[in-house]
Image 1 (cartoon, one colour):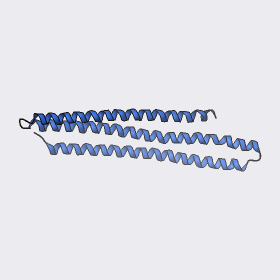
Image 2: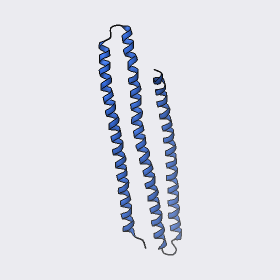
Image 3: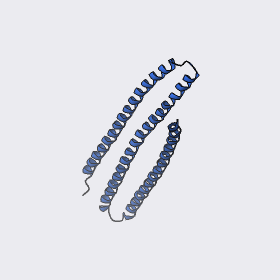
Image 4: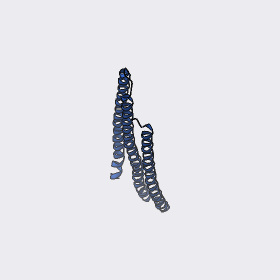
Length: 176
């Protein structure tokens, strides 16, 4: 027997669970970003005070060069902060993509089951229409899978490029 209300209730419960997971991911990421920003603000204030004191003690060219050399760690901290923000956002995006993939697979499974149950009760002579619907569902599932695979490849390439960019920024700062 086809129990649409039960399936709908199950789908709604699943959707609410997914919504709760996404909200939790967003809130956790917001907390991580707030912690990162507060730490950066604290560091900025401390560094600014130290820099202001250093500027007030400049008496000759050598002391000016020393103040300039002391500014290089601030650039390294900026790169580290930016990398930290990127890492938090990338982790949240990965979690949400995993959740979305699982949700899409579940919906696909539910649609397939619903079509199978409906076609069991289909009148004689509708086999070509049923075959067409199943073929259409299979083709759309394949297209979505291919698009997901392509998106993952693009994201992997982008992440590799970002990692390379951060490494290129960090390398000269490590030697400074």
